[in-house]
Length: 144
Length: 337
Ligand code: SF4
Image 1 (cartoon, rainbow over the protein chains, first blue to last red):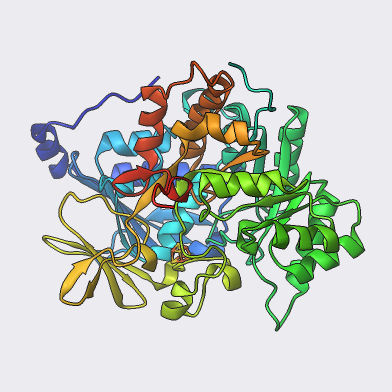
Image 2: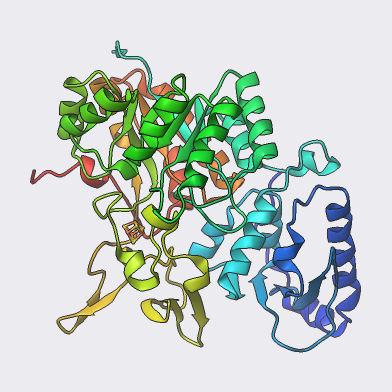
């Protein structure tokens, strides 16, 4: 299965922009917590503790903000600049998560924008790369 | 015509357990990895292996008949050389097939402490001729040397013809060009470089500035490149920066390019290289999978040198993940000699 080329239509993004971003951010934080709890996300939380993140899905016009607190993640409701922000279109995020596309390649091609603390960005990128999905139900969707 | 030489080993990078598995699954004969510390030249935050993942990775590769090499390829730093010794001990206890070392002192330690451990001379050891390789062989019994990416194909052939030490060469990846193993550019800007701290342009010194028109790359505040709106970006290394020299701003040291030896595979087989290495332990499992798959197919096809031609899907796969605007045969092809 490959992620097809697509950009979300701007009409949809206009609609999404008006919806509150908290539910998706909540789902994301809850999902991350599950992965940490089950030992699938091999996160050294001490490196992330207190840091604030934002995932901006450009074509969807939504921003998911969350932060690492202690041993888990929670929705970040503050409006300050995050420590780290990833920006890309939905299709490129999907390719990156499914390991169809290498984040450095997306970065070279200017399809992935990383802002803020460069070292934190590297920690997060390497963390995502080190998740071993084999043995989880997600494995069959992964390209590598 | 089918070459009488054995096919070179395909040696692929692993910065994480999933990357190691991707390399094995897509046809690497051998994978190489490093520990999570400054004892290897890809000491990046969050990258590399701890004891548990190393054991699992080695088991995964060995179960499938592949080999695993451990890179301990930085130079032990005077203040405390214990981490380097520990890394060698750990390699022996993990049961890797060989260690890749650059530091002669560390080789000495390895031979004395673990005589059964197979030693490879790292590219960081910067041995470009038989004499240097033979010195390491006679003193420490190294079995393989990785050649720096500064030799022409003819020079590589000459080395191979005059030594019984196996020769490994680079086949694909970002270029690190400056007299391998001796580059101090990163130290000049940050105080840390690959040989000393296992990292070129450490991330905490890197700042990307996103402007309206430009993306600026700064290393410890020094502006090293400025990319226009859709220009491809690269790694923020000084060697590939654009600098104002004599009133002109350009790639004063090296253009950002990637090495790609696909067109030269039959020649590399014919001259008898023992192994072809892929750069990129800092890259994701996706990169490792794509590059390994393409090179596996290409190597298998290159066995028949007469009929070999570079397939467009290999070039596409490699071109896509390359750093920079272009790919090159690098020093292998220097028509001017
Ligand atoms: S500055 Fe360039 S040549 Fe020097 S170590 Fe870094 S990548 Fe290699």
